[in-house]
Image (tube, rainbow, N blue to C red):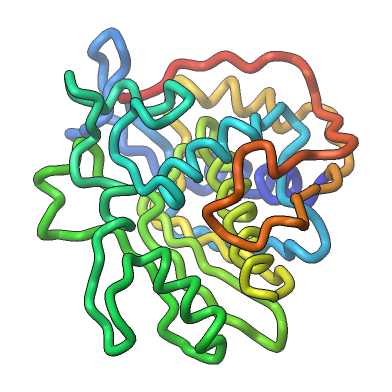
Length: 276
């Protein structure tokens, strides 16, 4: 099995065996029929993925990498908060009649700030520092802007990235306040693994570790039987990750710049309701 499979299985078993239920509490998420969407959860899960060894994609079921990358580019490259710029329907439930998700995600990354070296948005400042100040311990993005939370249709889940160059390797910490383990765990891991690959390549670095810190790692009540079956499936070795080596500008990457070679996965389809 892939390292990502192993980590997901360990996380899920830990949550199911040692987690805490919020059944009966006043929870915000709900199901399509209006019922409260309760969870069983663990606080403070930390996972480490060595990107130099293996791309962290699960094989227990298929993770649709190309669609995940489209969302990543929508946020980090287009810096958009409008679903009209996203070639997927991931955000439809949180968009208003104009297609906006408010001052969230890409909007926050695109706001420019003044530095001694000039004006940068958060993404361009990261790229600048990786190229010019790789020893810096201040290479951080943060989109959990309290000033704008009231104008966000969904508070950011993956809200902060910390980048650190050790030797010639780019490492990163992804901080996430909340994680739906069935719907989004490997999706987010793959997205930010791709981001580290992108930033490393355009900065002349090699990839190192991605550390994923999850404050509230949870499984929704209606997902428990589904994810219990999922982690008992046959798993396979991780595929080879392919990135277009000719790209030297972060903004020249497209969803077609990435591919997986020999991605074998359990092809039994997994259908599940999504809590809103």
